[in-house]
Length: 179
Image (tube, rainbow, N blue to C red; front, side, top):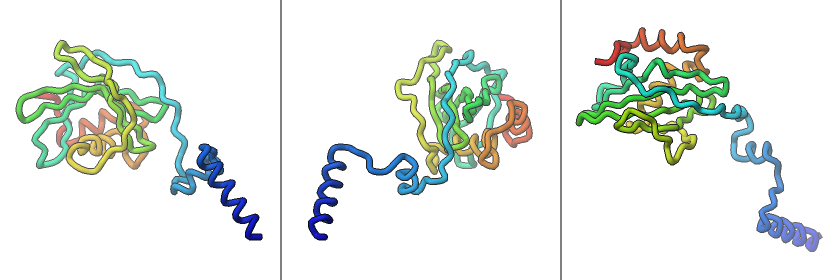
């Protein structure tokens, strides 16, 4: 009996060191605590929109202590069949800088992704590192949390259409057009 246990243990160690996975993907998810994780749809190809125009910007509030102003170009909002809401974001900093980016928020997983950054010549430049990242708690991701909860993914579900997002911007405290 002891010999069998020792052989089994040795075999497990050898298999693990060879990189062999002894459990399937679902079992591994269960072990990590993600047994009920919903599968993520294959991401659709991204088409960069026209560069944002001031006339299409809608401001949204992030918090009383926020020193920046945040805007979404409502003409760029795209609700994808893949569960991702894509949009152009403009951030006007307290120091006067203006930054543009084309981004996505995945409602099913509470993640964000930057696809492209704005160039001073009013064109898009693809982001060097465009990967899905979790939306973190804290000031750096506060605007993503607001977009997720109040505009794009209310009740943790993706909005039905652009009209629903436009109604949310229009009814919000900062639903006025950009100044």
